[in-house]
Length: 557
Image (cartoon, rainbow, N blue to C red; front, side, top):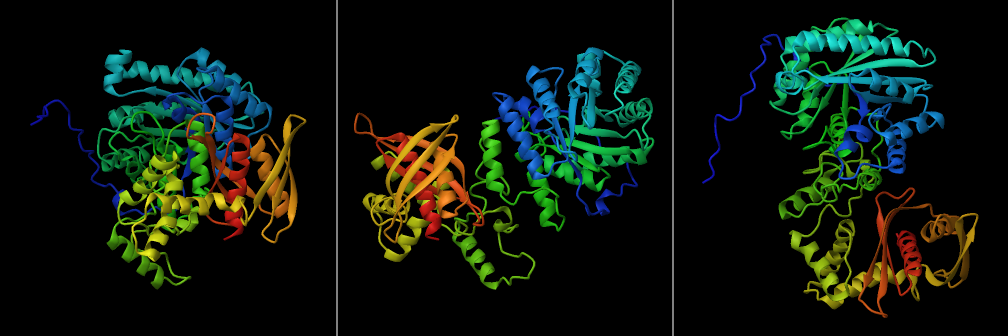
């Protein structure tokens, strides 16, 4: 039996706060959100984002409604510096969005950081240094007075530096890194020094950001720390009190929620909780937790699947299928008792009632999801078995979300036939669902296509036969065959498709191998996403067939 050394770890002491008020408080308003996906999230990736992916994710954060975005560490990374300059020089930062840049306490780094954001309308400069005992004694070998003097000197240096750029509104954010492990008296002393040196006022705002750099205690202890600081900070009316929880103990969300009860006004984190070690605060989960309590988060997650696809593409990190609110399986019940309760909840529900459906804490349609996959087969093997047979017999490897969609089709057929389904029947169902719409008698029968290059893009002339029998020629232009086909369908059929995911695989081997293209997409005005598939010896033709398959499925709904 494995034995753990009981004396190896030190218990974090409770906070002496007999007049604590946070346990009786209620969260009543949305905090200020700061997304740090481009900085803290980026530095935790196997392969940090390049400029294109950073700009894509910045645009997505703006679209979602974030008003403060940490865009990088420009003094430490040439890519970060170039991205920050591009955002400012090309005026890609909306007037109501404030970028934040981070730097350590070094004059040369502060110089480079200020240079990176010169000319911006409003900027947050984030200075930080670790203050907990083990960092002071082991890493830096500095006393508390020496650390305080270092903070005072560099904030004064920054203050004088930014005074040379009056065209920009400068906000200081100071983070006592490792706050959660430091003595509260030391944290207060150093934070008050930062407030005084910056000369915080209505005209000179300051953010004091308290991180759980590494979680070491239960969330109630962090709430006590935040309330203790909130009641003692100087010039409190000019201070925005922020928190930056990590998730080492798996309680980052709880730390943030209790910190809001304790006086925090602002939270920092990443979409879906990306970050070093066990991750940062999951902003999507926290925001939707507030939403389920009747507080609008002021962020737009009405198409949560599209957000997930952008984040996965930019970070190359998959989102767990059981991730709160966004996972592919979070609205899927395999248990028979769960299925029964959910079904009865939908029957009893009235349109104007508060949302009360068993096992569903949020209405999936609020997130752009559908009800189609909520009540499903009773075991994981239902979906897994279907996927296994298609892969074994036909070489088809379906994406997980496609497995979920197709297994619902198979389950419906199985319930009606009340017979065991063999591989041949499953293949027929797959063909009927995804391939038949582009063949004889289908919704959009493919006839032919012709591609040509026009000004660096591709133009498609696509001939299809409609259900009424008429052959129609569709025209579209895009940055590739798929984009051109989507544009052609949108223009001719008034069907605004959006492709969220594309993949292509070979079915078989040798000269007779067929290409199977799979697309996941959505159509404006229709909740949720659908899949389309195309099979052809030519890979480009297979991808065009997949787009037509997707369009045909939306036409038939």
